[in-house]
Length: 68
Image (cartoon, rainbow, N blue to C red; front, top):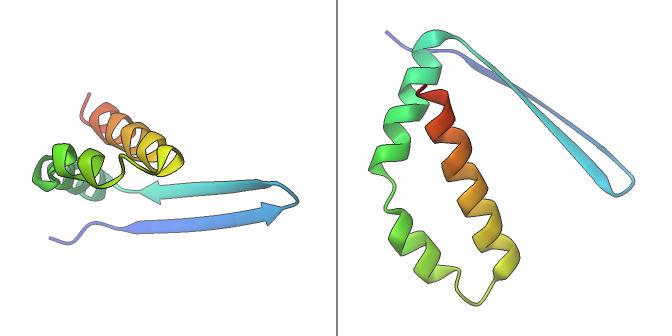
């Protein structure tokens, strides 16, 4: 069974809003995807890019919270 994922991006000025709408199957799939990503490697690759590193950490946290 394939989950659904819809997204909306709204950019105005200096702000960007990203809204994700997904069903339970899609949410569970994103939680599993988080487990497949080698976050240590991502952090290593972004060690010279603090903004990207911070976003990687926040994305990882958000994906983990989906699993609660």
